[in-house]
Image 1 (tube, helix red, strand yellow):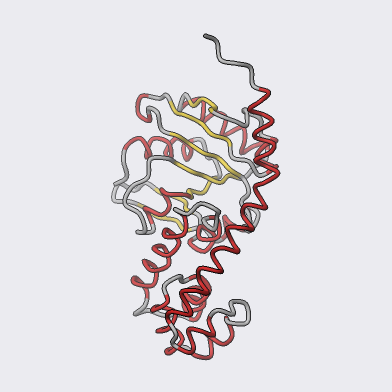
Image 2 (tube, helix red, strand yellow; image 1 turned 60 degrees about the vertical axis):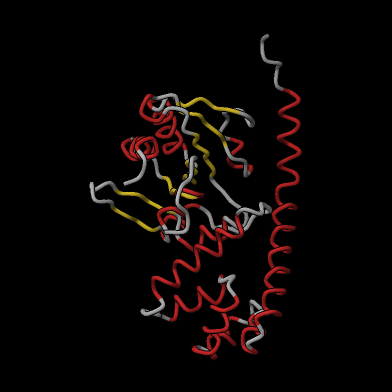
Length: 252
């Protein structure tokens, strides 16, 4: 079971038929790569009907928009997140962050087609961002996201390494950040490694079994992704700073 405040948020979204996918730390919990997360992050379909349903769900949760940007759906289309704090007694102080697009991720309809659907022992259904899309969304400039990516792929590999399919092996080769795993996969599936290496050249080091060189290449790959994320967010951060400066001062 997940903690009651989080269940209240997700069940309220579902009861209002909000088309959403759980992402962020809570999704990582479901995938076995995290033990706890305080916030609830979702990506939604940003059409008029779904936004109306979200508005009704937020009202039931007594959710207040916090920080910037202000409550205006146009900011979702620009790539911002909208941040809410729930005041409903069953979800008191839970933070809910809402997005509709993320760097490098497909539009919501494609994300929905690739989603993971889980059901707990109490028959509650949860719709999660698919693991590959979750990993892409986690490729940010934040240092804390990169160990999580490694844990997500390692957890998936540990669960399914005795049931390998070509799609799974390709996924591990594309996204693993553990040199030993990549070297082992290269030894087991040399043809797949050579094919995936056309898009991820660092796998050449895995073919050679050089863990130290592979670790260095992984660090450089991470640095490139962090730089790309910084460039993506730079204009959005400038807009947020302008919005902060335009906010009226809080009453004394």
